[in-house]
Length: 301
Image 1 (cartoon, rainbow, N blue to C red):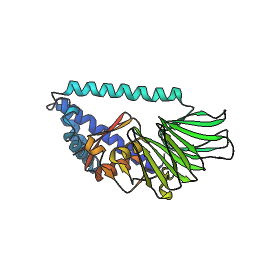
Image 2 (spheres, rainbow, N blue to C red):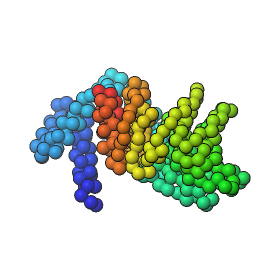
Image 3 (cartoon, rainbow, N blue to C red):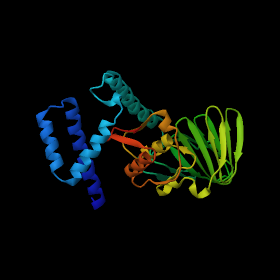
Image 4 (cartoon, rainbow, N blue to C red):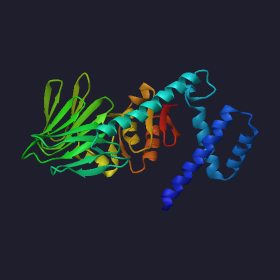
């Protein structure tokens, strides 16, 4: 284990210990043992004191539905259970359908057809490349496709969006209910509900249930998650949180439609997703609560 990993582990352990003490005090404010444990933890050193104070501020600011003593606790608990069931079921469903599933780091995959697919973290695809058409179903996440169009046709399916390569390099991303197709080289034919558009290099089409939004994009910003960077132009707070969350364990949720729909700009370093998420939250005046390995929640102050 290198020094950076050791420091991150120590930081996580301090945060987990502080969170445990805060939960005990929230359930029983007069618990003498919990009070002693808190005082001992804070007295251990400046890092422990700073960690406890930060966690206490976040805990105090948490939405009431997340607090045990709140009168809506039963409803909040039911919602948490339903969320946990969904987030346990959805990965299982996708894993049963997928031929390739990527963990929490991007990976490049060479298909037996000779085509190369780069998949972002927590992405999954199903392949059907043996017939007259080479077909890739993007079940989850984002893929960047570098394909040979000199022989059999190559198409990517994402929901009810079909992107057929007429050139060589393009990205297809699933962001919530939307699908985003971006062309880095050549041309791509996008079909959705009977409507067709042919995209050229440097064009991006966002397809939603109601319409499609076409815009220009700098080619050096296309699929730069391959280099642990994210250009946030044209994205919302919730979408960026979703992309960062692919590199974190458990589910990542943004509470509040207003916060989730807030437009964001700039470039994030994805090499440390925890720091990237903190940076995003700070830019939106939001807070981050984390149940390590299970769920990360971002909410407005």
